[in-house]
Length: 381
Image 1: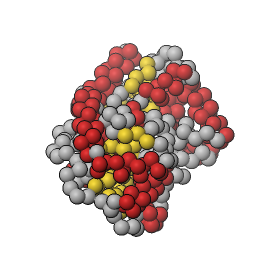
Image 2: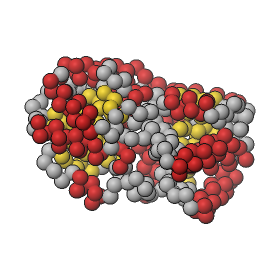
Image 3: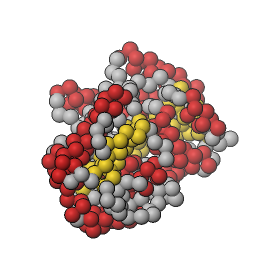
């Protein structure tokens, strides 16, 4: 019988969006795959089950810190893992990493922990968040005491922080090339900046710290000088996050000339094909944002923030622009510069496309994970 492999992640749609291809490859390599998550959609659960995955609901609250609720989640997961006894568990995002890591140590299960960006908690500097940082790092050190397993990072800064803080001395710390993209779907067809209008896309989870307000204001101000900029906004509402926009807020923000709200878009290659620029003024540490990898694969111009994860992929004035996430004037200045320096920005897009094609395709990312799973499985034996 094939080995049991469990993915533990905080919500179903995130697994479907970012991890489905890797899970299918894991299944095809001979593992029996279990998906442990909070299921918010019966259609996603049905889709995963049709692929042959065994789905188990875990009552995660992604942003809550109520101790009784968290203990209930921990105990539910404890019962699931005690019964399931997977050979390997791959945990993704903070709470799954900590709860799943602690329980893996308890039940002697090999665990792989994906750090997909350290997020808002490690980007803010007030006392509350500094205290949370200390607590999270303390718990990660507990998780890191197991003799086998690994931590996987999407950018070097997060990895370097874990090394500096001595999170583990026994487990491997690996960096991978983001989530990877299917280069057969996200492929270059035409250079950007071919039309009279410059079409800009913001596509992300609809969180305030993703910087939607900055790019909206920048487009409005740039259009006061040169009325050629159109902004398209697409994204997923994330109602569990304290940082989330409501639907009413999004409709109000986008209720302006030259700004269009598209809703949740499933066909991203077609949307990227019709745009010139992808803008992500994120204010917190990302892993490597998937939308930026997708944009690079299709040779779109990328404007993003000079923060962890974003400047891992995009090198300023080489493969795009990395700007201060809160400096509106800088964003406006760059928008006004683009039509005057088309050749330069098209060159940036070509450089980024080459980088993505060489390092960020699905095949190379999946291959790295399958080798890691095989290595950990052999160690466990």
